[in-house]
Image 1 (cartoon, one colour):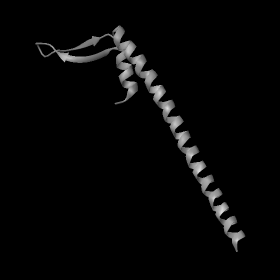
Image 2 (cartoon, rainbow, N blue to C red; image 1 turned 90 degrees about the vertical axis):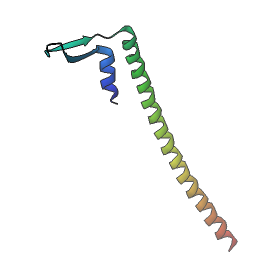
Image 3 (tube, rainbow, N blue to C red; image 1 turned 135 degrees about the vertical axis):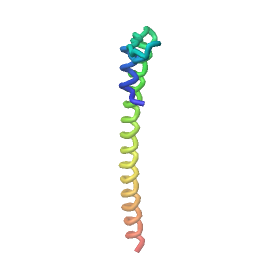
Image 4 (cartoon, helix red, strand yellow; image 1 turned 180 degrees about the vertical axis):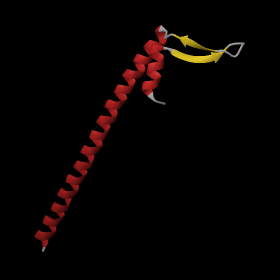
Amino acid sequence: MDINWLVQRLTHGDSYTVQDGDNDPYQVNTPPTHLTIKAAAVIVTLSNQLQQSNIAMLNLQRQHEELADQYETLRNTSSTAATGTKT
């Protein structure tokens, strides 16, 4: 579900078309309530926190990969140096 669409509907209310007994269409507008406006604010806050957490996680994954590469390089260099001194 698109979060922007949901927040928009919660914040501004909803409109839809129905037909009366004579099959004439008319529009029904439901305004937002205090609760739906608060819910929209909470959803936006949680969405922002989730995005920030995802960015932090991706940065940590990148740092982990870099450290693993550096460790492997150091280990290989250490093995090569140790092997070279034994011969």
